[in-house]
Length: 302
Length: 306
Image 1 (cartoon, each protein chain N blue to C red):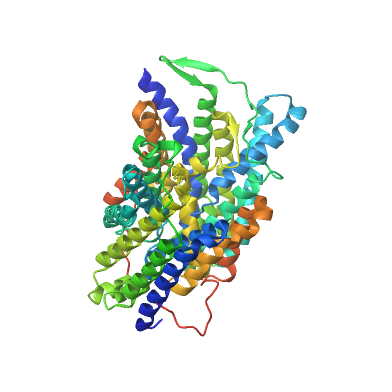
Image 2 (cartoon, chains in turn green, cyan):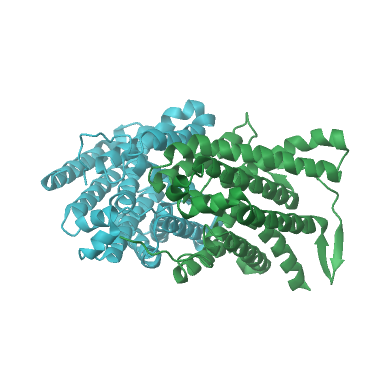
């Protein structure tokens, strides 16, 4: 029974990591760099929810389902705009520079957002309670306690993953994304507006991060400016674990990591080493399969 | 910098360090403290420059090696307190810290240097975090509450003497026949390999050497601050060192030293606006990458000072 309980908790956590990991992996797919600021978009999503929810409750009544849907959509749009702005201001000017320069800029952007939000005149470093978006009920399934939040997390993630698959595989813009990720120059020559596609990718990834931010905050009671760092790091490990740039790989890596983390957290001596375990697994896998679980090994041509 | 010049600089540096250590007591203690911070930063930045700059391997875990060296030498010093000549063992404890850091560097380097670019950055970041988590959970080194009461052995003499030695060893290494391999790996790994450079070995050598000096810097830091906390070695610290290397211009020794000095002094000057200091710092990183990606001190007419 205990195992079932942990499997459900782990799946919920893994689902959130999957949403974040998709953002990392999509951006890596089109631009070949790790967007360190991604985890901060998640945090901004949680804070946007914090400020928007009380206002919407006046309109829709407290904890109404319609209100929550509006919150999700609004916050996703806000974060998509933030993600696209970051790309436009910080990453686009560096388009043809070495990858390392972009990577460092990404670290800079991440630090900038974190320190700005920690400033007492912005959000302040203290943590604050996250509003209860929906009333939580607990169901007992086969002896395991499943909260409605967990079910919501898994359901929302499932729907979004399906939507993502549809966008990437079936739509015109998804085809363009895959083309840009396959070969940017050739895509540009075929008339694909590369900059617009990259911007769209950032928007999509950031919207997913926003949803993940809301779901993550619903599971943990409080939010603070550095709240994105831990889930961001895990999701990022998950993306690399599955093979960065590979969408199903990111989901697989995220679920694996969520499960492992929950199991390790349940073992008394190991719980303090959770960060080390996540990185340890990553390193082991990279040593055996340097391109990740589902990634393809690329051979450098001369 | 011509090869013969390196030795001269070493002598001048050590002479100045010895001189400073004699008169060190007469200076304001605050200034001496800041000067030691600068010296440690120079060692850290120069050693990371060997890995990130000269060899072109992007490591994000330098603070981890610093932590290993710091904890090791502090532990030895604490064990020896009470002995009559405990202070005489200070250089030995620094050396032990450096060697242990080098050993850890070897353990980290051999498997991870097979990876390239982003992956290497992630793995080194991961190793740095693992070292921090281990320190946080090891009772023998104070666990999360940190290691307290480390004797204050670090002075101007030791710091700048060792900084001069670090610069000397690394510049001579890079300028040696063997050291050309580092630059070859940096410029084009495949071309280097096909010209007979053992790229893996070259990368591991750079990594181990860099880790050794980071360990020494960690030991100096421990005996300067007299307190070590695992949170002091998180990845923000690694980023600090990386920024010094980038600001100075990857692979430009003089630039990197200047950047280490500048970035260590900057927070002291920005004390008035402490609230905005880190925001300013983050903006600096972004603007630097947008406007001067080759470093603050790089000019067109200057040849690459390897």
